[in-house]
Length: 173
Image (cartoon, rainbow, N blue to C red; front, side, top):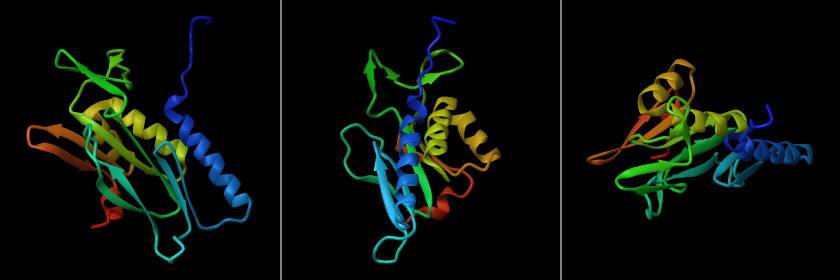
């Protein structure tokens, strides 16, 4: 249909990162850490011999530092959220991620979703999709499909985390 469009932003960074990882492997590199726009892919080990680690930013506007630090084992990590690409107007948060049910920007207590996967495009797609599913359906879907995900929700006390599948086994500290 001439008026229909397709936006690949939900997987574009992940796809590009996978292509970078393939190119590095094809060039004979077996130990590397690649980052593209916040999405990461780690292969092999850090030069010191330890696993690669990555920080997941605290999903609060103006906050500095990491919410969690995780270990990566020949896999990708992607995070989707509303801190960077959203705004609040008249008490309503407008996100860049669209709720497929309402066809409007998501508006929930969810702040971010981080996902591990064997390829970056899959991690990128699931992080966005799980975020769009919301704080109830997203964790249920992730758990039932064995997706390693961390959901960070806003509540009156601050931030609350829900982890699915084996996400917690990758936490450091």
